[in-house]
Length: 164
Image (cartoon, rainbow, N blue to C red; front, side, top):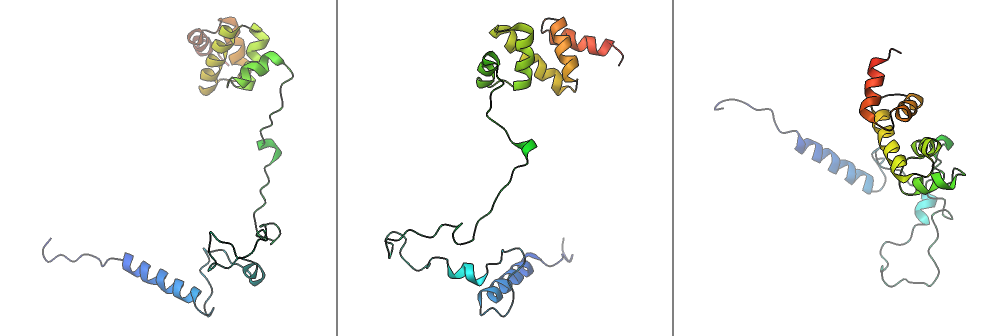
């Protein structure tokens, strides 16, 4: 270690550049703000409340302007295929199990096979989820669990012994 030269520390250079950018952007506007900060146009900046006013004692009784009235805000759109709808399946039995936290697809298949049998439905959903996580198709999983009375070990053995 003695006599060995290490490269100079770089972090002080980064801090100096960031401080210079801050000073330049907060000054008289001679230099533009860094690109990683959003730009505020002068009309929106003029509509912002005075930062010097007391937070606890508003100067007037008028309500503050809403962000949509001032032209500020973000509009978020969710694609329909990613929206989760709270609509029911139309089957009150399946809806009861879905409301308890079980997956809708597995519950629908379980109720088709076992009706309103809570033990069988929960066994089916548990096995269905395990086998689907292993990568087996929904149709094959439902068939194998129905054939082997929700026995996941037998269903896996069935998948491994059959050629597809």
